[in-house]
Length: 462
Length: 93
Image (cartoon, rainbow over the protein chains, first blue to last red):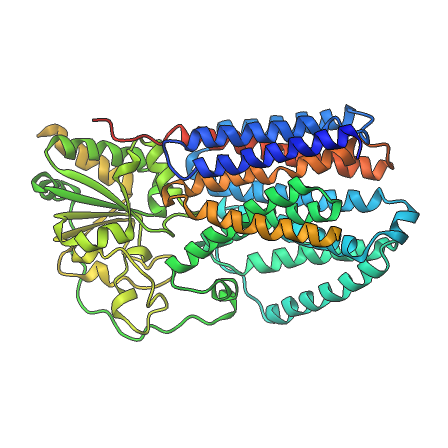
């Protein structure tokens, strides 16, 4: 090893340590910003030191790529709406996957005939794996992005033969992988691998419905890291291996948390498109009681403790700022306001927390489901905003329900429940919600933001 | 031996990742994801060599596009994470 190679590798060790430290600091909101900065410093060191690499003889194309990519990234980061974070993260997952795919391809195309004949099978297998995971991540993320941004229908697309087609893909991947590793000089196998990866990513994501998107984004996030790590194995670059795996682990943990929050296995989510919906076993008895916003105000004015349960509908209605204003008015009135956030509320892990943070709601007023359920009886009013399945008592009461067994926020145990909703229709899971029919539930129908604003006006008139 | 050494790194880094991320609270899951978007842009390091070496046109083009895509992740990922984390505030008493 010459001096430059040693220097580069030493700098990589420093960069890896900074990434690890950065992730460690991310475990608390007070230190998270610093952690992100330290991680960015690690990245800067890794990138700058790599430019010393003696194989690099021209900087024109590097600069071109970096300026275009960096400018687009910076613009996107500055302008994206907080409600659109799920789309942006899945688009970025896709870019990460595509970058790994292209890096794998470039590594292969830079090999001379001699290298192609002498390199180990391990190298070609890892290259194949890089291209495969990178391609699946890319096409899967693009579909997820399309569904989240409304460019594609968020419904699960299912057609006859989908399962057979997927199984065919998996078998073909093994076959092509073997051919690729034993005959790497033939570019046909490379193109087959790319095509297979892209179409498999498309198939796997198109059959997943809107409400399962948090799981899909977390999983694709993990894949983008695994692809980077595989590229590191193929090129013998340790910083790629280590860093890629940190991301891979992060995505897997989030995927696991999302699955647990829905009481489903990962396989069940990924294959949900193949199963037929369960017929509801029982009919729900009772009638819906509608309440006008003005009357909701009188109840809230007398309340001592209020709990807000937000869902994706709050993001759609952009109601977070109105909610925050209502919170201030209630607190001036001597009432305590808490927020309960279900792990799968919204379209990505932590989505509601970011929206509320944007509206200046302090993070120590946000609670997880397990924190609020034991003291649910103490709340005078629970306001459910644009959430449905995460407060659905059918998960506890109705054995035939598709969401039976899912842990939910037990809003129905509070003294009064206000459900702010456009209409009394079923949620994304397509399940009727017995909460709407409970004795202590009042439906406040209409746009969530409008409803809250008219309650706020009542406070003003008072 | 080389392969064993690489697999060693894989196992250790995997376990380290799980231990680190498990401690991140639910409130920070979205910044964690955008932050890991940024970190997965580490592919940039590999792409730089592919883009700048004296290789065929194909390799240079593939490398340059990879540099651009990874740069989006690095620059965009860190900036948007920073923007989000700036919004998280404690209750001021």
